[in-house]
Image (tube, rainbow, N blue to C red; front, side):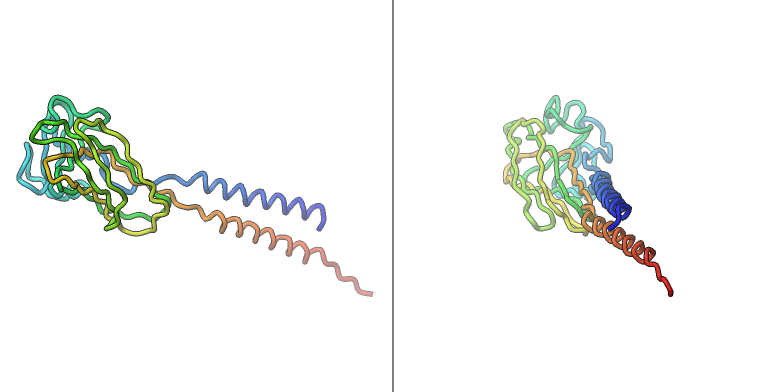
Length: 231
């Protein structure tokens, strides 16, 4: 191998590695959920509604509302006082509204993803203790029918972050569900639900492609260097 060919090989390998690194660095998490902070529709501070049911200070909303399906759960306008928490909402909420997972109610969303390394996160708080109704709620988090984990809140708990690493999530359509477990009137407040997936870069495929191009270039140079001499 000539000095020129060695230099060409080193430069090509460096280019392949740099290309892979660039692709990996440019991979960004893509949010796959809609209305994760429950800001739509705006129902106004101090109000609440049970979508799909004739209860609340505002009514008439369908059970599936702005991406979420409410089955006995509620949407709470959390600016100012509210019957759900008294004078002020638990600290740490995101935005002006959140969902209330009361008793054995459920809250779910159907979403599609192209796949990748996925992370699910959300904020949860406990309703203050009012004697009749409290915040000692336990709930399951499910993806389709698969249990991801069981979580709980206590009376008056401020919003705290919960995270589940889903590792590699295959491309497809899924249903994310929060399912209350309390058989008493206990409620967990849910907010800022996020499920993001980072596409896995085809690093090895790109490197193999790069080395293949290098090999093709070297073979081409060898052919060009052959000289035929006739007597």
